View 1 (cartoon, rainbow, N blue to C red):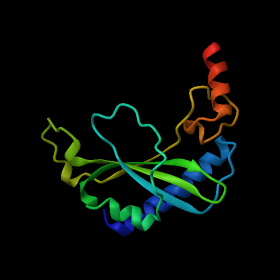
View 2 (spheres, rainbow, N blue to C red):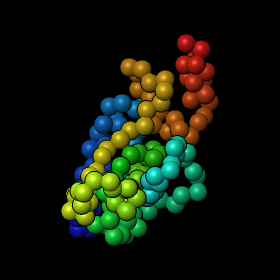
View 3 (cartoon, rainbow, N blue to C red):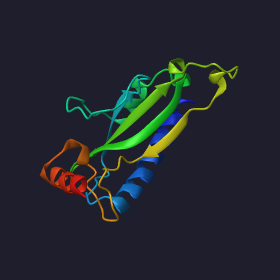
View 4 (cartoon, rainbow, N blue to C red):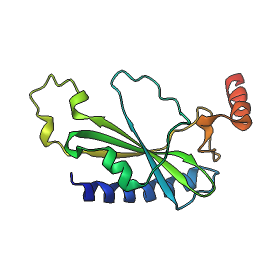
Length: 149
């Protein structure tokens, strides 16, 4: 995959993910996009949000993903919605991280891109806050009632 194709796919994916999020979330979303990149570790069990990550432009985020031909899978999700910017997280999984017991060669496999929204455990038919993973009184209150039921 070329950097131009990857940039186009991620840009279109960001816009599509924003449409989906507007239907499901109570947040207001900005059209000003920023990105962070995270490598998915094979031994990773649970990802916790960290507050020390500096968001950047899509071009800079793509430069952090080099070499493109080593990327097996990309998960694009909304990391955080703020008033004047929407931060997307690009989680990627490298082909070299896969233990291949099969005879299938991964070098000619096209990079897959998935759009995802992390749902809170108490999700029902109503809209939810996309920033629920960062906590807050509203999140703790809903978690309390969800655990009681």
